[in-house]
Image (cartoon, rainbow, N blue to C red):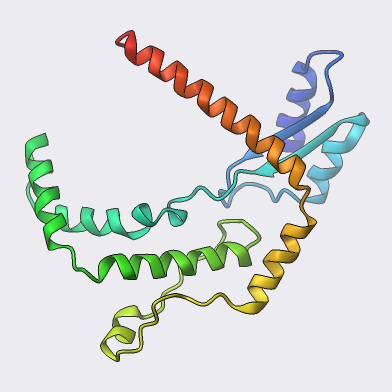
Length: 196
């Protein structure tokens, strides 16, 4: 798809005289080609072009403790209620919030810490399974740790990868993404003000 369709389309539509430096961003969905695929990399560099396939940074629900488990737990509890109106949903959510165990936040943050380690192992990719630690069993045995210690090898590998990154380039990309997001937020605000 990239080699036969996307890259040729970019080249055909790219304004003449502009830089030939292009980042093609894809999400981290498993069906996408690896950013390091040799065939794609060769197509990106052909004919004096400087294209690069980059994956979006991990912005998955696994990196947000609320999305990772907390909202899921609330939703599961909420589904037990028969909601037909918005008021029913609000009432069920409040009732569910009151049912949440005090241990839930601790458990959620431990799951988040485990996921962060998996992201480091996967070099920022999302091709991993959420690890299961048997937290309930550990808690019953009085052996549940307060934090998940990062494996030293994983930590060192992550630091090595970070050391290989061009931080200035990453900051420029991040700056551009933030500027675009702010611009889009402004457009959305204007549309809301117009009642659209």
